[in-house]
Image: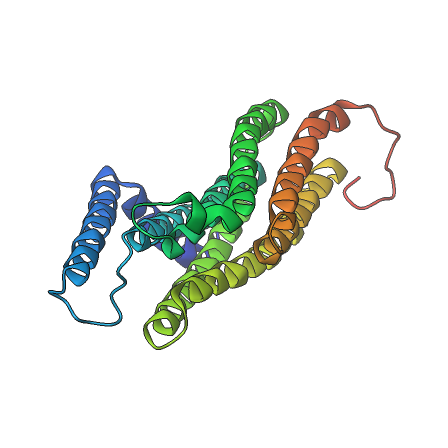
Length: 293
């Protein structure tokens, strides 16, 4: 099937950007930049501590470098998620779970920036319960990700290849989300530099991005109806959109509840992946006269 001129243009642009991002050379360069920024942050903080850099905007706690490293790593993971929107719904959902587990780990380490060096029990004692809850939730999500991918592969066995037009449409959606990702990233950096606390600006970045992902997931669901109206696929994709909403709520929920919601959202995704192949294989009555019959 030939693509319309707009889809052909977005398909070519997406392919160019995706190949560039996925190339080993670019991945190594990104890893080198992350390493350099982490080490550079440690050096600047140490120079501030010994009085060689009197700039107030440079923190004096080395754990700020850890926070920066996690923030940058998450940004790279999110960029990979955006490019993955053109793939299967299950793979995209899996990437969201991966990012959720990293966010929970980051949450568990946030309080370290307020601790003294070396770390002392007395300074962190009030924060230990929330740190432990976030870390435990991250480990549970990490364990469930493997199960989710296993179930997802089983559910996709025998699935037909998506139509080129549908794939190109998802690529166009991914380009739109990529543009918004860059906009939110630049805005968050600006807010962090010009007065807003860095963590607040970064949290706002994820809040907005996951809101966009909710609409992107639903848009892909409706695009899929133009090519294949299938109850099982529609329900699974819509269910994954609900999971994205729950993840979005978990990001702004208070301590302990955020961990419970994150794990609950992952369990729901695993349940959908487990139920899908059974429902898809079940015999059903004739659908004559209905859409997609």
